[in-house]
Figure 1 (cartoon, rainbow, N blue to C red):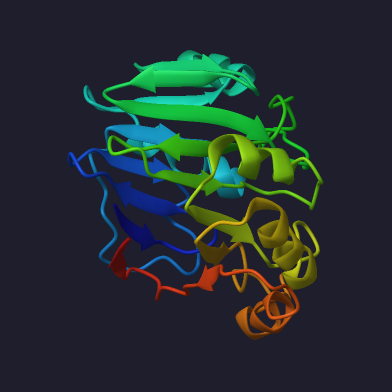
Figure 2: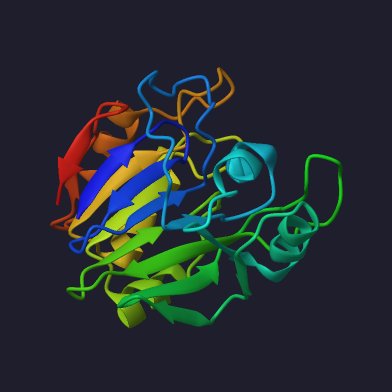
Length: 228
């Protein structure tokens, strides 16, 4: 797969068969590169309704080819906003489409729309690609022990984990998450966007060293496409 980090929690994934996936599409975040890919995307995944994750969905999802995948409450909201193709699901379920699998897993976080309306539960996604490789995007979350189950059930080779602290896990908790999940690769996210997100990569690296695990830390530059 090809992975591009667009800042905050926004990632572009290009699968082996060329499907384009955008996760938490806040492409207007303060760290986003100027040459960001505006699509169209085959799939847009939303982990929860906060504005920094729902992001620019209303702008990006109005195409004939784009399918948004989100929890039921977000689906209903987007349909009312005129988004043409939205698949709703819920935690524990797997949606199979175009040789891909999207499994919705728990996240420990709140979820509400910018206007204060209830946005359902926050979630993460495990994406299983055409060749069987899987990637876990944790969304906004605190540490929870059932991450061990995510590792045991889905064996994600790649984990995208928040490290920014204050609103999400910090470096200490994210390192323990790696111990529970045991991914081959971890990519940090949700840090440095705002001053209040004080968790940093160097602290995360130090915390990871406390665990005897083979997980490799990769820190892509924002806008840089890496092949995994």
